[in-house]
Structures are given as structure tokens and as C-alpha cells.
Length: 250
Image: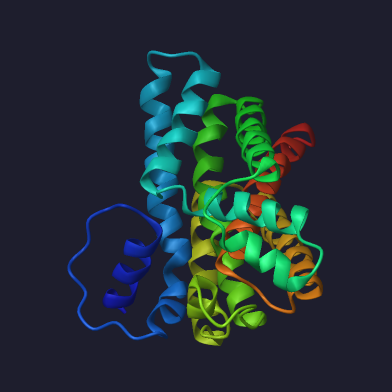
């Protein structure tokens, strides 16, 4: 279990980990159980960055700093998938062409616009919250959003024969989902009210379902880029949920 956690941490962040010998193709799929736990580390790091920056900088600048820091420590893994997915789905009309565009290392107009809108959405949504709520939702957003790739990997087959998606798609099972779900539930109960925690589960489940249905329709499966995109969609949706709950005084 510890070995699988380090595989997940090594895959999703730039944090140093012990050297892992002789990994098999199915290891990353099993390590997906710890994706939300890696989200705890990333979310807490981003929250700490926000709290420290807020001591000397305006609120919006502190939020931007936390977003940049989280992107840095994760190597922009999910953001890269988000941009590639927009390029692929925006420019490809067939499954083959869509997958071909996603594999291209160059970024197109759709990808650039997607990243701009993504950062602006996170910045403005988080900045609209009270300072004592921002650090909580940074943690919640990073933890719950990493539940989406776990579920998509258990649900959908790989859309191509090679790539990161194949290492997770259909490689995860009920055990991994239970571990990941328990991690998310524990974090939510420790950071926000139970009403808000219930809303987070509903929104996360709904966004994951909609993304999965779209990926199945367009690609008859899922890729690593699709999982990254779903994670980012979920994170933004959760920040929007936080604002809605604030207005509803929940």
C-alpha cells in the first residue's frame, strides 16, 4: 500500500519519493486509490501558500500565487490534459483525428483559450470567497477533483492502445474506489460542514458522470488527457459550488 502511494505521488507531483523498483503496467491503476490522498498534500500545500502570501499581498494576488504554486508542484499534469482535451475535441471530428490531435505536443488555439479561462475561473471564483474559506476550498477542490480520474478509470475502457490512460482505465476496481472515497469523505468532514460536504459529493459525481458520458460518446473510452480535463472541470465546479453555498448561507 505504501509503495502504491509513492507511485501515485511520483506520478502526480514533483515531490521527492523513494526509488521504486520494477513497476508493472497495472501498478498505476492500483495506485489510483491514493489520487485523493495526493490531492490532500497538494491542497494543503496550496492552502499554506495562500495563507503565507496573504500576510503581505492582496487577496487576489495571494489566490493567484496559490494556483501557480499548485500547478508548479504537480508539473501542470492536469492542466496539460485539460488543454490537450480541448484541442482534440475542438479540432477533431472523428475518434481517430481527436486522439491524433491530443497526442500532438504542440498546443492549439482551443488549448490556449481553455487554459486562460481555467486560470481566470479559479482566480475569480476563489477570490469571491471569504479569506477564511479560501484555504478550506483549496484543499477540498484538490482532493475531490482527484476522485474523478479514479472513477473514470474504473468505468471506461482505454480509448487507445497506448498512453497514460491505458495504465489507469479498467485497471482500478471497487477496492480502489472505496479507499479513494473514504479519503475524500474524511477530508470533507474535517474541513467543511456536512451540508457542504454532501453538496461536494453530488457535484463531483455529476461532473464526473457528464464527463464520462461525453468521453464514451466521442471516444468510446477515456485517455489520460480526458482524466486530467475531468479533474479540472470538477475543481472549477466545486469552487462555483462554494460560492453558491455561501450565498445560501450553508
